[in-house]
Image (cartoon, rainbow, N blue to C red; front, side):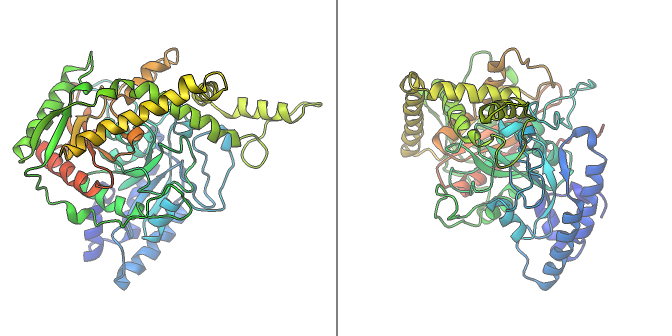
Length: 495
């Protein structure tokens, strides 16, 4: 079999079980593709020795007949996950040289299942960004191009390296994290599938924190079946994470029947934004028709507090970030600034943080500190928390009325060029999260499925939002949508 790196998880798993290929061959194919793809800047810490060692162990395990589904499958790990003995920098200068002495729960679960780690993936610094332009490693680049245009495009953010690597077949799948859309938006931009599970479904232990009440890990894969396979391995209760849910993890793959007859799919009127491109509007309408043709009932719904979601999110997330990032002070780990004679501890904190954090992280820490300060706590932070509760209640009301899933666009546009969104107006960048942040604020599962191409040949995604803890049902609806959309486009290789 040639081009083994182009396989998906399910295809590769089945080929491994049949003895048509072994994990070492699969891994070597991916390592070769990674070495040829430096132009994408997706992998920022390569770990070929670890990969081949795990691949050999996986082959032995498969021969022994006790191998779980992920055994022997080569994947990439976002740089936000702590990996023992391997740089885990959260794409920040302040964590330069940090090699954890422990493994995050999610990456440990994948390793225990026999998955092969190929290396660490690029991302926005501390997961703050929608375009992967805030990374200390430089921009991650999308494998997609606009027509015959050579302009470099964003793979989305913050899980930009993960999206780029999966779309370019550098790995079979990758881990991502999603605080306000950081799995679903890059998945939509690069024509892959990404699911953010219910808050508490995957452990956050050992994942560098951005906003603790919003962060959630999830898989980024080539299709819905692969997402179901990988998600099952990533989920599960973890006593080390107090927000981890003590719930059994179902066999998500077994729930993919494609039968959605009688399911109620809600279309929220508030997501019809002013200035939404006609292509996004049409894709959304086409998606609803596809689900209807598959036997679902399409109903109009209202989520009245949606218009307050973005401002509420950009109060709550920076507030939690300012608290979480206070630990990076040059004392215990990571970077410490060079001090002048006579500098004390205050100067050390100031210089270290000024040098170590990029502009976007500094901006969010300052916003967060401001909204948490004594004079503004009630005016901003508490008000945003109340809005969050109202947003959550909107979804609860809709689900209580019998709606099974909600269909929306994943992003307000296709991928844009690197450098096209100027630093001068960060709000333009924040508007990329307009369709995704509500899902994090309400703690719900959401999945992005590639559903079409725009007129320039770039992928567009649709988002499905599900009931809490019902990822299996949500993935089955996504599977029906994927089958109907029939998206098979791949980027032409230029790198």
